[in-house]
Length: 99
Length: 179
Image (cartoon, rainbow over all chains, first blue to last red):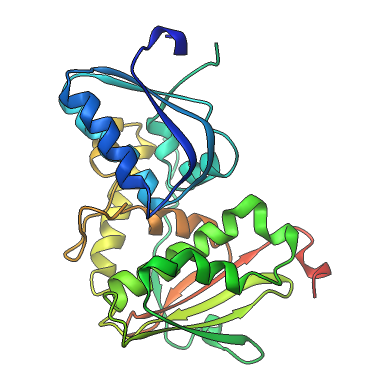
């Protein structure tokens, strides 16, 4: 799986925190409701992630699993990666290389 | 099989982490829209090396958020009280006026099972336990802030008996040069 193989992409920009994570979750759910079963979350421009953002990622993973689909992640780096490592959620993420 | 070392939230009213002598003090209203502002204010004079690209601010914001949301239930009449000390290490005592984290032992039990699932690489179970859902959790809660906090606050995370005040500390390499 490469990032270019996935047409349905959710891009996280800037900060995904207690004030904005609901928008990310909603965007992903719209795609799943439309029947998307392979989704890429692009974190190239993500600079801040908190527990609410991590919770949104977990919900997307849980929902996609129940639908029999897959979620891939690209370019998780810096502090957001550290936050995902601290709570061990990084272990659940399927990461794809940059194209 | 490797033995698992699993941390716990600890209750210890008289722990040294609650000794506020020499610490600075700030008090904030329970304004949920300003959680991250409050963290920024407390860290204005924080050494750059302690910030770790914003990780300290993020973890402090989580404690403030928990106090305002779960402790004070966003009641504007209730205050969040914070003692802080950024000499040699990052140390905070954060107290709210709520009823306390009464599900602390249940959370410890949940965390133990979560970490054991991770240890045996049972990722299906781990995904199901990736977020904590307590009695007072709502749909907006991430449910994972305390998992990260136990790792991040490497000098300890202690609760008082009422469980509405937490003392935390993080030590840094060569932190003593920032006395």
